[in-house]
Image 1 (cartoon, helix red, strand yellow):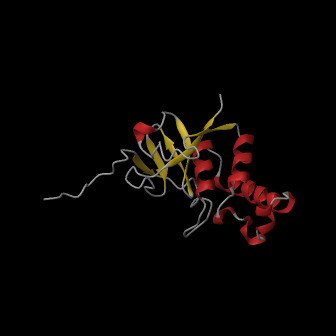
Image 2: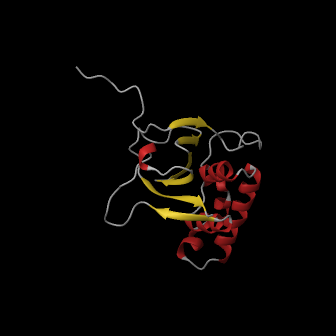
Length: 161
């Protein structure tokens, strides 16, 4: 006889946290995990992070000579519909964060969204099509995005000392 697991294998406790999104007056669903996560990890107001990323997305679209930037449309400047990795990386560097990769070409997934596979501290974690925060083994997000501990971690940002 098989028994269904009633707990997550990720062993990360979930603290539901929208990063101040509701307090800033936003409602409904959005692809704003970058804004929420940066707000949670830095303590900056959601609206400030949102405005900063909106400007950064717009600047990237208007000034970058890359094929990606030329393909973007003006309506995509809103961080509600996501923030491109190039923009995110530059913004986090300005805030004093450094990147630690956990996945490399040809190696497959080595680190999952599990407490024992992540270092202690406050981490801004990059997963497939999602950014989330893990603080001392506690997942801070609007939902459990760990996929029961099977979600691959591409890398994470930490505040440089």
